Image 1: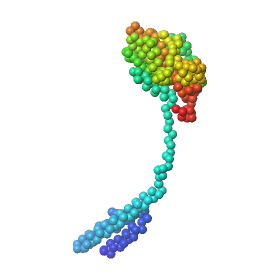
Image 2: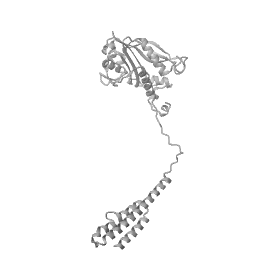
Image 3: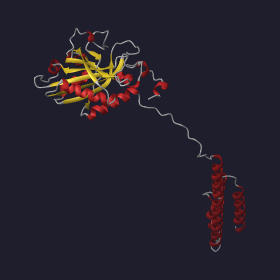
Image 4: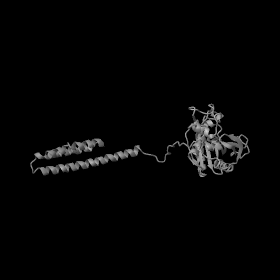
Amino acid sequence: MKEQIAQIKERALNEIESATNAKILDEVRVKYLGKKGELTLILRGMGSLAPEERPIIGSLVNEVRDELENKIEERETYFENLEIERKLVEENIDVTMPSKRNNLGSVHPITQIINDVKEIFIGMGYEIADGPEVELATYNFDKLNTPPDHPARDVQDTFYITEDIVLRSQTSPVQARVMESKKPPIKIICPGAVYRSDSVDATHSPVFHQIEGLVIDKNISMADLKGTLEMFAKKCLGEKTQIRFRPHHFPFTEPSAEADVSCFVCGGKGCRVCKGEGWIELLGCGMVHPNVLRYCGIDPEEYTGFAFGFGVERIAMAKFGIDDMRLLYENDVRFLKQF
């Protein structure tokens, strides 16, 4: 039995030393020390030995097991060190090399304008209101004092889904919904996409973005409207920006006006951006028509208000010197990288 153990020990040590990788080494460990390994089988067969031989053989087997386990551990450490050295050579990283540049996007100019306008009006105490883009004609027209025979309701100007449902042609329906659901005082702006049956060209698109504002309270006047728009123009387009009103007509405001701003490029002297006029048309505005207040459940004898609205694309084109609206929708990276 002793000779058999010595032979097993010698074979095992030779195989451990000649193992060329961790996988072969593990196979040697299983062969000699596993549940069915050669040393394990000797321990299981000790029942056939004389009682006085059992402790001697048991002690000898344990000594051999300990020696083999130590040799296997040493060999494993050797293979681990070889693997580390290989990785240091093959996976060497030059930390002085420039890193790969990630192509980062930027905020779209339309979104920039919307975010800037939101920040300006939130600073003046306004809330942001939202509503459906697929709208009932009642909110898009009737509650805004737009009669059935008004040109804006013609199929050539408005996208109809059914006779009573349209793609909203302005964000004004949001104002009507807020007035119906909330008692004054009301101070809101309504940003969002709107739809009109326009042909695509340098200044028109069937889908574009508007921001409209509404204030309803007691004793609101045109002076409040002009002061608000002057503050907005200076914050959005520059502190030297001036504003002027020109008489106009909108069915939902009375009196109504078109608001122009002094050209922020030339300061009013005349240039390519303002087409030599010194002024840039900015938005439409006016005092909320008493009929609109009535249709939305607000007493015009007690409350007054003003409203205004402008196209986001128009502001973006003026502020960034863009001469073709289509550039804002074509997703040309060469154009968008400028922003």
